[in-house]
Structure formats: C-alpha cells, structure tokens
Length: 638
Image: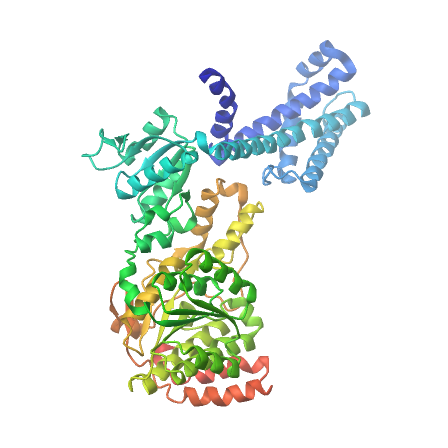
C-alpha cells in the first residue's frame, strides 16, 4: 500500500520540483523544449513525405540550415512574445500567438530554402512544417497549463482530505495544549505526528502524548523524515516576523500552513473557542503582537449605553463585536446601509444571545433624525465610525465627503452633548495629516471640530470629546489587500500605483482594541494616535500575498498603474509637534496640544451647513470650504 501511494505521488513530486525551479532555469527549459519542438516538426514533415530513411538523410545533410532555422524560429518566438506570457492561462489570445508562431516558422523555412540555402523548395514541406510547428509548440504550452492545473487539483484534493493530513505543531505551550485538545475533539483536522519547540527542556519529551521532535530550525529535516503535510503554528502572541518566516519556509517545503486564533478568543482568553485557520496576510504584518486583555477595556463599557455610528462597516462592526464582549447595558447600532446592519445584527444575535441591542437605519447627516435618536436612546458613550473613506471616490464626490465626514460628525457630536453623553470618540485617519485629498481634508476638519467641542464643553464636565487616528486596516471592505486577493484569484496582474508607495497597516481587530483602550484613557480634547509599527511597501505586500497564495511573482505579475487622484506616496501619522509632544501609553500616542486656534469652526460649520442643505453649495466649492475650515491651524502644521 505504501509503495502504491509513493508511485502515485511521484508525478506530483516531479511537478512540485519543476515549479520550484528558479525563473531563469524555467525559461531555459522552455527554450530547450521549443528547440526540440522545432526539430521534431521538421522531422515530422520530412517523414510524412519521404519516409524515415529519406528524412534522416535530408536532415543529416543540412546541419547549417538546421542551426540557422532553429535559431531564427527562437528569435521569431521571442518577438511574438512567447516568453513573456503566462501559459497556464491558455486563452484564444495565446492560441492566436501560437498559430502566428507556426506561420512565421513556415515562412522562415520558405525564405531560407528559396534564397539562402541551395535546397529544393517545396510548398508541401513548408505547409506541413508550419502545421507541425504549431502543434508541437502549442502542445508544449498546453502541457504547461495541464501541469499547473494538475498541481492545483492535487493540492486541492490534499486539502480536502484533511482527515489524512499529517500535522506538525509548532509550539508546545498553552496554545499548543489547546490546539491538541481541539484536534482531539475534531479529528478531521488531521493527525499529529509531533511538535516543534525551541525550548531545550521540552525537546525529546512528550507533550500530551506527542513527542517534541526538535526546534523550529529543524523544520525541513523533521518534515521530510516524518512526511509532514501541514504545519500548525500554535503561538498566537509571537512576533509576525517569526510567523512570516515560518509560513514562507513551510510553503517552500510544500507544507500547508495554519494558525490561530481570531481576536475574540484572544480577548476573552478562551482559546478553545478559536478555529484553526489558514495563515492569512494579516498574520504576516511587520509589527509586534498586542497584549489583548478584555479586563482593560471592560470597565469603560460594562453596564453603559453605547451607540456606534457606521456600525455595519468594517471598523464599526468590529467595534460592536468587542463592545458586546464588555456586556454593555444596551448597544445601539446605527448605519445607513440596511444590508450591512442586518449582517452585524444577525452575527451579534448568534454570538451574544444575552446582549440587548437595537438596529437603527439612519444617516448621520440627517439632523432631525439624529437629534431624535440620541434623545430617545440617551447614549452614555458614542463611538463615531461613520465616514466616507475611499480617497479617489471622494475626489469625484467631494460634497459627499463634506456632508458625511464634516456635517455628520458635527451632528453626532452636538447630539451627544445635548443628550448628556459622557464620551464622544471620533475615528480619524492618517490621511488627515497634511491632507492632499478631499477625504483627508474632511477628516482633518472633523479632528479640529471634535477638539473644539471638547474645548467648549468638555471642561465643564458635560461631555469628553476625542479623536483616534490610525492608518489602513486589513480586513476592511475595499482595502488594498481585498483588491490584491481578487486580482490574484483572477490570475493577475496585481496593480500597484507606484513602486515607492508605503502605507501603515494593522488588523481591524487590533486597531479597534486600541480605539476602545483610548476611550478608557480619555481625558478629553486629545488626539490619540495608534502605534502601527513600520510602514509597509505596497510592492512587497503584493509579492508576499502572491507567495502566500501559492504562486510565483512571474506567474501573476505586478503592474505599476500610476498614482490615483488625491493619493500620496507615503502617509504620515503625526504632525511635527504631535510627535514631539505626545506621550506613549500602551501603544497609544496621546497628544493634548491645542493644534491651533479653531475657535470659530463650529459657527462656520453651522453657517455652511444651512447653505449646503439649502442647495447653495456646489461640488466645485467643497475644496475651498474645507480649506476655509482649516484656516485656524498653525502655519507649521501645513
């Protein structure tokens, strides 16, 4: 039985070896295949007309002709783009190129035999050679596609046969214990063949009945000796650098990679609720892991009435999930998208059956509706996540950015104060720092507005107002990671606007945890800026995602398409004085400076808002109005 399995897996091992070769070596092999195809097509044409002995005699007498002809065909193939295409996608376009290659080879044969070499010219040879050249070169490329398809089907079948997976578990600690218990409860996950751990005291010993075979550095040796099929990383709080290195190393060894957990069990400490999952891009972010403790944020929200705007969005829905864990008295979910609102409400009903919550379909720019809702529900804490965030889209629709990001923030902040809320927290973005876009300007105005509300009303003990600023989050709808995943799934290319472009990234769960942590630290009036680690180069992100998906960069391709309207090459998290004066508290930078005189911003917005709702402000005036609202900032922050 074992011999049979070995023989059936041998072709797959050959395929894996072939696809693992360096790109240049693959190209050399393709060139060699084309040379053989050219020779065989010519031989087939001669065999068809003259038989075996005649064909061999003709070919052996034409050495120089064969050399020139084969070199010429390779040159024509290069000019036609034979070696710049991804042949695993053999479409009508590729078929046309192969037909053109066969025709070009036939024409070259005719020209050489008619003008340069004293050979007998034959139309039949010319036509037959062209046909056979098309069949042989096309067959070679169809073979590449077939091999790729077989490889992916083989991998899919192996993944589907999860009950047969031979698992190595990296980590013989508490998380490893919980993973082994999960596998015992659900044996379909796979069969554990051993563990890896860098602690010398654990190596060679048994851990819940399974031997610790060695350290992580021995992964290659142990995986081959034990014929491992998957590596499960059971250390959710280690650095992403280790996860990244292990993931790509395991991929090179042909191992499926899995990890745990999601944000919920990390917060609650109940890792048994976690689900083992494939390694995702968010697991590879270059950042130090957060120490997530529910008890650090629970007291701020427990037993309180909490209202979340934009509750159906990526950030808003995660806020709802984490606040729900803190057992608020009531959670009000406000969003203008009924579909998004339905999804998060349905999830909360299933995950937190004891939670009292209300779903409210409303637009934050609807003044009477917002006033009534806040008066009815009397929230004690307002977490304002409703916003338009797509930069190029807002460049085309600036009035929408002004309406939601500025007037919507104003409406909610005023309603929070009038309804007696104790805290109003507004979500901001790194695009608000030295903004180059309508979206960025609108969010900067929202920051200034929130600070001015606190200056006027916070000191009187009525309502504390603060903003929390951070960069991009993974897992948000419309994010670059989501776009890259779609492009890779479609076969590429992955589009990058500029090879120099960098962005800050954090998982949505970690970002929201720090947002809620900021709410517990709030003194009022400050801007809290999240520590997001080092910025990530987008081209490197694209390469990592391609590799994580099981492809090589040349298979998918990366295309530089140019910057879009409103985009910057590198976003910033701080204005200069913010970085100098902010103090760090548990991965949060808190800046309590005044940031300039924005004293008249509330009155200006009130006046603008009346004109806007009255239809007196057009799309072309919005940028000027936003600049006017920012006029109180100190010169050095521009």
